[in-house]
Length: 90
Image 1 (cartoon, rainbow, N blue to C red):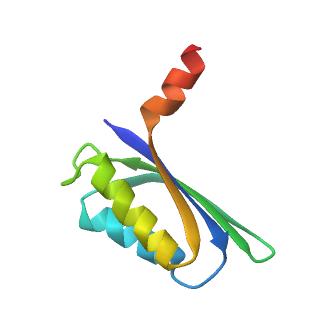
Image 2: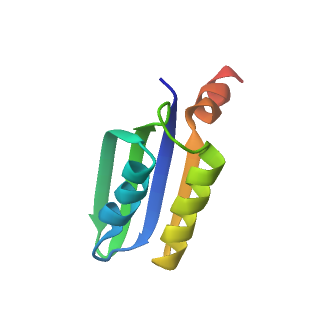
């Protein structure tokens, strides 16, 4: 299994989860875990996703999610799990 972490933050509004998850579904990316919170009017979400069956590479997926987030006035970060694994090696 190959995993990535998707983080989305910004001002809360309708459709954030739907818009981001629809991009993931379109590319056959499975959501393994999701956590979200709303602090007053600020939205924060972290998704752990399985990208092993994705029909696009991580760079393309990252570009689509970041573009959609920007369009919605949000910030998104998509990182391969190896970034976190390597951080623990140091």
